[in-house]
Length: 439
Image (cartoon, rainbow, N blue to C red; front, top):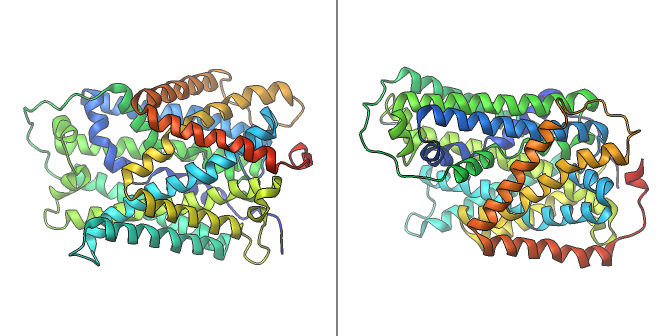
């Protein structure tokens, strides 16, 4: 039986969803390279502040769109209204085939990498065997939890997010209590500042996820804006605390040259148990991100299926569980397939990179387009300081797109090819039912 989404997500649930998706394993993996690009201790803190402010600029635009159009699908709805149904379809298409399953695979591999260090079921086999098994298992189990019901999915998210946030604060506390390392004379290897900023924004990625579940948020006119802003600010504060703790404990050179920054910081207080403690924390962080990506990503596919005949199976909302069960299962199968094909964290990141900021740019510009195209639509929230935050974020997106194309041109053009493949699929599948978006 098909049904419609119910408003079951409180402000706390919504904020946990955002924080849980943003804080994956990126903060542990990118911090040393970001430090190399920043050039100094104060530069480290400054670049993370810039990343938080840029993310907040983007979040303000999404807050206006989500409060004006509080429906499932997020960018799919905004792009369709701003540019036409083809634009929304291409977003849903690329999310279904590239971005969302790839993001799930990225975080599932991050979980698997550290889970294997805790227990390797196949110690005599190559590490990739256990990592693929763990990644597929995490994707499958969390998908089934979300299929079971919204309450199950949101409570899994709330618990994982709370644990990972407390874990990060524990690292901060231990690092500040531990004795600082002696200064080292070795200068860190040079690293481009532009690539460091890309890595910072990658680590902040996920602040826009609130838009995809807008139809399930209680009091959406107020709570969507609050959750987006609270989530972005909370993560920025946590990242600054973590980097401050690393700098205090390891020093700038120690941070920039670290191979396992969190473990090295904690080992100054818990020399024997640091490795396992950090592995457990990173596993929980990655699982929280996987669960959040599964929860929100299926809502994009649901919006796609509700509008286009070729994907009608995805547009069914299960009345018994209160979830887009079919969309969740298809998404999980594609993600598991990517894990088996890509077989590494790096390959999974490269699979998604080229398309993400193009759609960020298009959606941010939709704030401007829809203000002129649909001026009578009630906007409970309007971007603070408009148009400055929107312009700043659009320029940042353009810079990141350019940097990605220059850095990995073949992968970037491959992603463009997959995107353009969606156009003939759209013309074959589109049906004339614009009324859902018109209301």
